[in-house]
Image: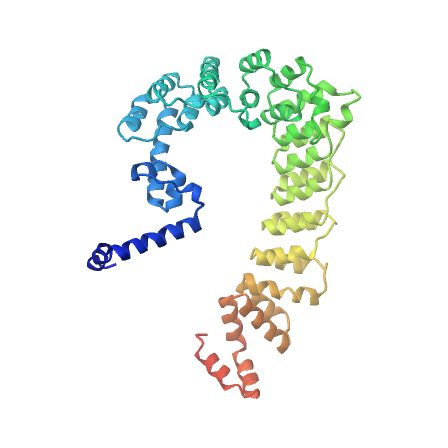
Length: 457
């Protein structure tokens, strides 16, 4: 807006008040009224959700740049830089986020500084305590536990919601210690607080981490790790996370026992293929009897691994399905396509041809046509509709090798128009311009002829 006009408008009180009234009305419609409090500017630019509410995007980006730098100063243990951002840059300290980073990296000196810096308002140490096991430092954990318990007495325990209760906070802290592999912290919480460790969630954590010490710890405390975990077979889950050593431990613990048949399934080897873990595949092959499903070879094809395809072909009898060749075409792996064609008999579906068109793999498409006879010529010719969306190269190939009637050509052009594919449309019109000029002349539609003449083709 022109500056002179702007000044004149805002110096006119009636207009100015009317403008601000409209602004308030619009703000209430866009943002819930309870989110928009009356705040001073220096307050707004320190509260992310308020910056979002008022549309201060540039200030929001600057705010998070400063926060990232402050967080990095904690990570690299530079308390001088942290003090600079708090004392000089004036980043807000009335949040638990900084303390969470301090707990994660075990910076006790920084914790004492932050505690002193905002000693009047106090800290909520709940989230920091949950993060403290990641420091892998028992002293740090104890320090934050004491701070949290003291803050609960000072601020009052919030048991109105189960998530914020003392019991739940300590339970989550235990789970974090379990995930971090901190046995000393686990022992302390288990021995001093009423931590329920008999749950499927607790058993799932060591399976993900892959630490046999954690499984032994649970067994020593009478946790039924075999019966509690019902999400899937326990060996399957350990190997799904790529934890072969834990898988071997589970195998050795229960080989030959009555429960042996329910700790693993054929999915274990299938999943190992998806994880590209040939070592797990071979270990299962030589040590377990569950085998795999035909999906294993299908998966090997989907990740483009000829090595795995050949291994399964030579060492297993489950075979594959037509999806193996379909997957190979989608991956654009001509070597896998050729190998499957020459060594397997499962064939493919029409999707193999469609995949090669969609992914613009003309070499694969030609190979399938020249070497396979899964579908009649008329069926293949009808696949031209996919070229109208994806590739003029394929479109040209189809018209060079298949014959289409005038009505079919007309439908191709209409399809290209409906798909807004200007390159395919231009190619079709250039090839068939004379045909459609004649057709339009026969229909006495001179406007269409003029439009075609003006096209840059």
